Image 1 (tube, rainbow, N blue to C red):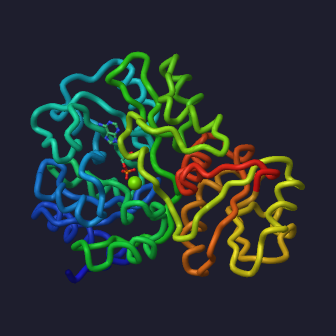
Image 2 (image 1 turned 180 degrees about the vertical axis):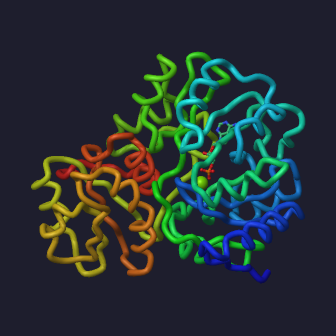
Length: 351
Ligand code: AMP
Ligand code: MG
């Protein structure tokens, strides 16, 4: 398939949006920027379009899609009820990086919901996503625009790398502002349950709705040591090895100097080292990539997926990543890093 690649400029945007709305209305797939990561969009009410999304990504069909809307009112016809706590969360965080799970109305096909009776909704704030969605009569199913298992895409160039030739069009607007996927909260239960950490933290959610539980699969990431990430999460997508560069990743934890020494002792020219700006000098050998400054956690969220992808270009055989728990205010960074490592987390003296 010949993929149309649209570079966003203020002058070209209106025509790009018209062309892409037309493609979506005809059941074709269009990748577009959101404030979190790029999304791979298709008509969420059209089973055939949803099927194409799974195929283009190589995504398992039991992994449900998030429906994206350009105005809040678009939600109501597609869910059976909206609890008061859902209203409060939408009021506080929409448009923005929050996904809510509600009970699905029959009008949403099971292909979109991955066979579940619940459905995920998000109202993105990115101006391109917002303008695209606002002009459509249907919600757009849009999982992250990456090949299944690979790091999510935070730049137009990443999307082209993964999906050129597999979908009808890509809207390339460069870098996205946040860089990690939305926070997911299940509101079919009370108290609500956090299923995936994201840019909006648990504390911020609690300020709006009081008690929020945390899915055990997310909770357990904090107590992991040289064991696999716990299985059976409530968000089906969280059970797959994900965000993975080609080389195996090992996360190393412990006091800063011990971690640096242990990694240094094992590193050669073909070793990747994922670190922060402040520690780059500790590694004279290997391919050393910094995710940002430990003093600015939002830079780390923003750069993580790009750095994981860049290791692939360097041809490293193995990657050591420093434990970033201290730098991780939302839990989203370690959640994604642990998945990229397949749960491979060791203490410095176990390396
Ligand atoms: P992605 O858009 O690629 O970030 O993937 C969507 C994520 O949302 C996956 O982890 C899904 O498992 C999760 N998700 C979507 N719909 C639901 C649902 N109805 N219940 C639980 N998790 C969901
Ligand atoms: Mg994804």
